[in-house]
Image (tube, rainbow, N blue to C red; front, side, top):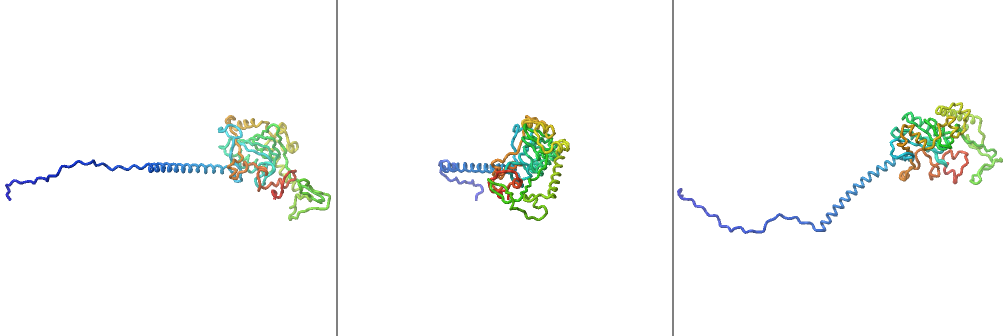
Length: 392
């Protein structure tokens, strides 16, 4: 190969010029048809509504459960309502007083059964006092209209008042609204002050037990409502078989023995002495004055104030104003709250009465036992039906 020779190049191939074509574009997403678009919007809306409804249901359920819990929490173990309502004053007022009613015969507790009239369970009133704190109320007002009642029930109320006063340092004021006799006087004696509405009756400091009946020479008895009684012209007698001396005490078909009479008299003397000393200590009346002068008499307002059983006469409005002032509150900014009768929901959940109150048997329906006070006493009464069904 000649090194001096000039190199030659090969010309490029002769390609035809490029021809212009349609422009190349990116693929476009297909839009859904009207049916698919509507279905998608409907499904989204439905899903949103479903989620919203579920959320609302959950929230409503939470509130329902909370409401049910609150309602059940306002029902005592004995089927009584403990919820409150305003008796006097403005809703939402800063100052609060708690009103507790002692109305009708004072019984011990629910185990006694019912009576023909409404009454009060002493143990439950004591429980209300024990449950109250300084934050609940600045004091207690007792609204009293009672002929008296059992020694244990009256004592329970009195003890509850004293425990509340000692624990909280707050006052308990009493308003007699018609009558405060016997157990009513005993149960309210420790109160800081006792006032009576116009025309009230206060007193009857005494103890009674009975009645005991004795039918001699019984020939027949009648159990009809129209003609009830005992025929005692002789010929038929009745007796009880028992073991233990005096087990049939109170049997109306035999005389009371001297030993039994002495036993009951001793018991009455003990309770009477306790009653007299209790009133004397708490009301500042000499025991001898109670025994020798007052006795078991009842007194109107003026005489009751004169002998020291009450501190004055006030209407309910005046009393509440006085109670608020005594508690260090502004009467214009004070509300008096009291336990409610059961609401409809509470009734469905088993509540039948306000706490502390004993309803008459007519309001309790079937299945309730009548108090032994009703079944065993000799008080005239009217009752339609078989006593065995309610007295056992």
